[in-house]
Image (tube, rainbow, N blue to C red; front, side, top):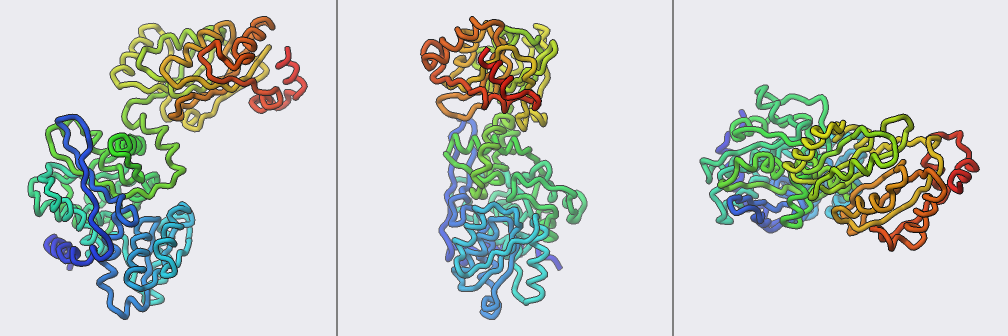
Length: 524
């Protein structure tokens, strides 16, 4: 006999008496957006473990008997649930064996140990949550230690539901729509149950990653199904199989499902940073990302989202920054086909309109009559559309290279045997619209640009590695004197330094090209 929605509501009501032994409520904050946009964010990233999972873990473990607490508990988690169990173990004076995949970021492993101290034992098993979960269940069955499920447990769901109680008690409602991210479905079920009791007309949108949609699949099938593959960028919601109990509740409480791409999640992270200086973990921005996709249709409505956590590995930031513009339709990468001759690339750059920023440049000479530079741009979608129309009208051949593997991994082909009088240099220039283009037009008009590697990093200066080839010694020396001889004071550059011939050798694809040949070319 499965519990009812009324059972879940009553359990959440009772959970309010327990969870605040562990921590205080988290704030509900409004984003500063357009006047006709009302979007609130529940800040679970400000909880003691920087995620909501402490609520369900503590509520479930508070219900354990003294005998069960004496035996200790077992759980499996890739991060946030583990920290919640560790917190509860410390406060309740019990022990916890926490099984985590070996691929769990060190930051999350360290956080579990720091929170739980001597009360927890972290056991690394396998390379996936499934492997860790299987081992944890086996240890629980063999030892008789209670297994604390991350989502498919009525008390866990009720504990997560207390964050919705805080939303109602804030006095900021009524809300027209709530975007709730879904992994296993524990938070979505608990929160949706409470919100629908107090805001009967609210629309609950369940948000999943495009390669994580296990709950939508379960609701369609009428039972949990196991996905063949699950993307782990939003690792807090990376669940291959929704819970038996949570899928029943979500089938009754979720009005519709929406999916978001990783790039759209990155755009949500960027918006939270810009508006509130919040840096959530990817799963924490999924609800906001879904709202951004439906932004125009939400104008005039009161919207609720949940920043469910902020436990992100620092190493993810670079990927997020690079892909946020793609997710918000502001960034695109183009592969052009132009003549492989001096001036062709400069002529192409002259077509870039004001207000369009070049954020990435990938180009290397490969010989032949055509070149295929890749240029990444950032601009408003309308300007991007107008730019593409102008290229077509001018007969310039291009393609959308966004997401293509060589662009994504910055693979820049380059063949040295096509060069005559090469010169490589590291350059810095003011990171403002037009500065790079001005430099190329002023100083490189009599040279062939044979290599260009630039990627926007958000600093006040841009840095690039540039390779030039000259038709004669006079032009090569003129460039060296004008740009390199006085640190670029006569150009748009702030700094320029020639790359030594030995280092330049590393850029050559032709491994048979000797170091002496490289040096002779550089000194020609």
